Length: 304
Image (cartoon, rainbow, N blue to C red; front, top):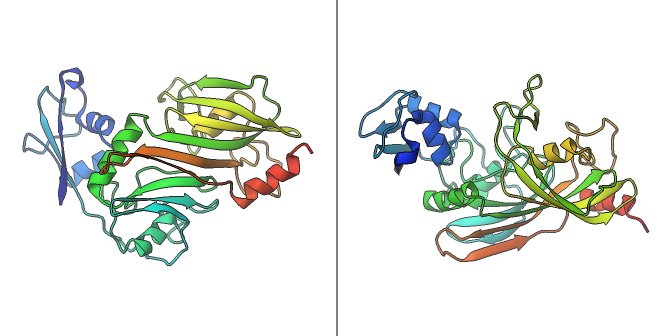
């Protein structure tokens, strides 16, 4: 079993143990609490409660459970791989594919395909149902993802996402004609107070979120834009664009209820991802073209 060690610095003293670990690692607070319940987290060699207030120089050790399939079926699903070595791979996820198994999506996911392709050789940091997964994109968003094959690679990649140093460039088609050719949306995002499956711009129980958008082309009733993220909140682009009155075309959650036949979900594609290879220490950047649905809708609304 691998382990991660974190030393508490002066500026973090007094924080709750679970909150401190969540803020200092790639684990969510719920994942931290689950690991604590299983006895996988120690403070100075002892098991402490979630509410323990950390002290300067406390040594926190997280014993990382090995990745197990937990009944996950390794499925021979074709993968569009852009790069692969012993430590990681970069894959272009198709629109409509869920990243990891969950209730109602136990098979046909990216993880099912990765389990087959990598023969189980994936990092275990993100738990038993998300082996190798460093970051995600929504089911109906297409585009590039980097996957870790071992824990050392996972830690190095996760640190870059936490520092917001990973290059992530998206293309989206939004409703309407944006007034400005480019702009910044600096607005915190949190869960919707009445619909817990949705997110919204709010100051309550929220996290900072920053999106830069740039108009690429003005279309018939729509605008093609590029988005660059400094943060990576759930549904960030979808929520931010809706908040300024320009929701994504085809978005079933944040957009109008009219159906766009060419699209099955939001017109959003992560076309570029760039990062420093966690082992080789070289910057790598990859780009992928739009998926067929995105291209078809663009062709329909393009001004001839």
